[in-house]
Image 1 (cartoon, rainbow, N blue to C red):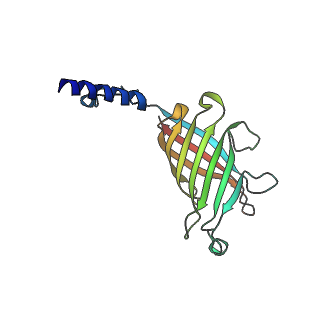
Image 2 (cartoon, rainbow, N blue to C red; image 1 turned 60 degrees about the vertical axis):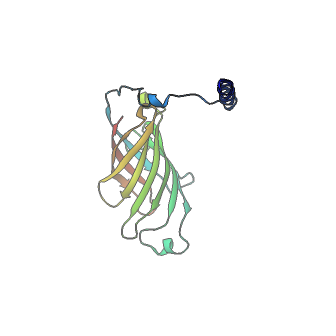
Image 3 (spheres, rainbow, N blue to C red; image 1 turned 120 degrees about the horizontal axis):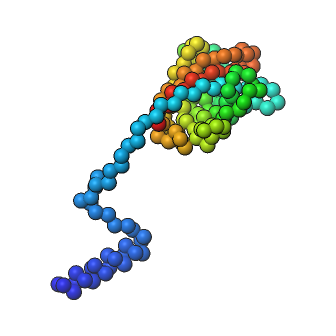
Length: 187
């Protein structure tokens, strides 16, 4: 019986080596404890420039419902892909601080309600290389809208929070808009 145990032990070691498995102690579950650092709250303000018109639009239509979208007063079913600049001020020529990359689509038949799925990636200052992820309904005709921050990268890893959006300027003919964002990020 002792010989059998030795053989089984050698087989188990060989299998572990072949498969690259690492051992762990089941009794040790939870014995590693990481101390959480104190959370930081960061407030940022910047401007989102969504350009649908001209020779170099920053947002383009990528899908729509075949007939319903054209007939809908809210453009229900339309989906846009965007790579919008984020700037320090409402002036399109002001300092570029990042890019808003993602998509938005008309998700409401009753109002202009855009479901927003965006990565706001920062390209300047102490937040350069970091990003936040925005997800939520943007009721675009309301003067103030709130959306969730559901994650982030870099300095904002494991972020949560909220974004307040206010339209600064809109051209009803083209749909071009400049939207101010005030974000509160817990990270």
